[in-house]
Amino acid sequence: MLQHLIASQPSLVMLGGDFTYADTWLKPDEHIPEEVQGPYSYQPKWDTWGRLFEPLLSRVPLIHTNGNHEIEALPDGRRNVAYNSRFPVPGVGRPAPVSFEPVTSSSPYSNLYHAVELPGVLKIISLTSYSPDQEKKGFGSGRDEQYKWLQQELANTDRIVTPWLILLVHAPWYSTYASHFKENDCMREGYEPLVTQYGVDIMLVGHVHAYERTKPVRNYYMDTCGPVHITIGDGGNSEGMNKEFIDTMKRQPDFCDHPEDGKQFPRDQPQRCLSWQKGHYCFKEQPDWSAYREPSFGHGTLDLLNRTHATWSWTKNQGGAFNVADQVTIVRGSGGKACSAPPAAAAAASGRYLRAGH
Ligand SMILES: [Fe+2]
Image (cartoon, rainbow, N blue to C red):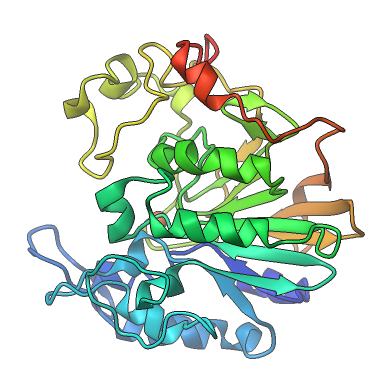
């Protein structure tokens, strides 16, 4: 994957979290066994990762966000220490290390969300799926600090000057893979109205170890007001690939039939959100917004051709560096439709939040 990535001669690299999996290692060649209690992280794995990527990242910038493996809760309670220390974003959140305190815009946690702008071309906004502030308050209620910051950041982006707007987030909002299914739906529910109102073009996400591209979608409907969501969590890792789709499983998880019963859900999905309607929570067939999905390792490239057109290409590791398996032209804009009034609240209130069959 890395050789292919280098061969594509990128101007910059975007990484949606889960860098090293240092939190899964006990020794250089030994994973943490299940019986080991408490948080642990084998920090030299960060150096290994740095050396692996040095041929590329010594020459081009890395735009990143944190994944669940960056949380790395240390025995003393601190989180994101290696991530914030090794990948500080200039101008935000100094100094690391961090403590487990609520987020404020001036706190070290603000390193977890930030924006990078290339004037005249694009702005990339990195958001975190994981912060204690959101754990306490919930996503997008207007109370969590990241939401307030995002609102300001979007409002201050002049799309005449900077046409392309990309969000980089770790956990997907739209994925049909069984792994981590709807795990980040609370964030989607809270943030999506803002994201569609301001016409975000593309959301790049990771977390799921596979590839999937959607058509423009919002609120589980194909809609030109919504971004194209691309799950590109297939860079490779020691845990292997996620191969199962939720709609093709021979036996779907219990929570598909009884989403209202919180006890059915895995422990890492403690939040409960509106897309829980019984019978519609899990897809029974591939949704129409899911344009292409394939569990293979690889990487993607995004070529911004001009102010309105871009080419997205996904290259699998099998085959040559430019053996593209999925390619699409992404056209900016909402087709002339006004997108400032997302229908989410009204649809949810009337119980028509999801279409039958989704
Ligand atoms: Fe992850």
